[in-house]
Image (cartoon, rainbow, N blue to C red; front, side, top):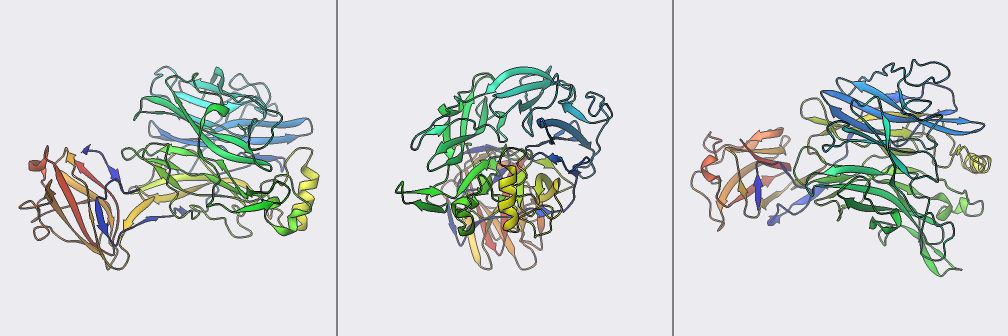
Length: 509
């Protein structure tokens, strides 16, 4: 296995040929509680759930949706906030949209901006940088309405967008379905597109519905050479849908089980700081009307809480959900994120050894204040169950996480080891991302391809790693870190551990 000088994460067993007392542990990020973006206007506004963060040219660029509920309909638009530190965001006066007859706002799509008169009709967007378009590298994916395809906008500065493709994603829109059939109107979710350098193709991860005693949301994937070559959603490959690991209830008249949860949003990212690592932060939607006894008679149409899970992959096709614990837990009763979470797409560098992620949290449960003909009925049912908003908040907040810190290979409070498969590398130092805390320690040995310790790099030569919490700890043997003599040779790395968390390793120049 040739790893060159690329960083490698312990998200699975790829770099574990054999091990003892090792368990892969998923770690949660730290909530900051900051309300970085919250609605500035009337109670008829909400921050949308589908947003994106980029770090480009030294600037954090947060593209977020706002939704305005008016008597004549729902209007959504996209705004831009910028920051130099990822913590304090400014809303620049762009002057592109005469919103409420004033151009002193940060709107980039909608109400005249981006060539869109009025609103988009669906709250949110997804923004990515296209390495194949030097003239207009910013691409923004948005939809003009519930029963419209996803359109693509482009920009050379991330501010002035213009329409590029009317139909980058679409479905067949089956109005009537019978049995376990896939159905249309899937795209009211944050659908993801980016260019994957690993396969030299564009990939998309989208919402796809199917019918089994009611609508069930799933996640599908497709890939193509160009941005206008994706299959219709019904023809895409489903990669994740509710299965036997998820709760379900039995429908007597249909004589089969129906899932209780939906995989609503996917928020797939190609991890930017290591090789061949994909991460997903799906929004898991728990449907009240299918499981909670007090709701079964009233049957709210579409109500329930949403939290965020974590999954990882080496290819974007096969995914590991580990033990299916929430990555972000719902906040307490009066917190801004008490009932719903939607991850912001993007993973950006933080301060020093951290990385930043963002999410939209709300104390408004999914289904409350729908802004449609079902609103009064849904609101009344949820009010009777004491599930109404405390502060009626929708806001984007920041999460802080250790670089590479999604998953660690951990021994717990015991001895253990990891032995990698045979590797080829380029570099003159071995760096590891490790946390020993106070009671842990580690020794590292390099062996030849026949599993024989190499002289000068044995456990007895290694300088013990202890009292360490470092994302780039330099490994040394007899006070020297130079491993350049081993370049081009097939070697095995042996980690001898006690009470350690090992996240990643890298041979570097």
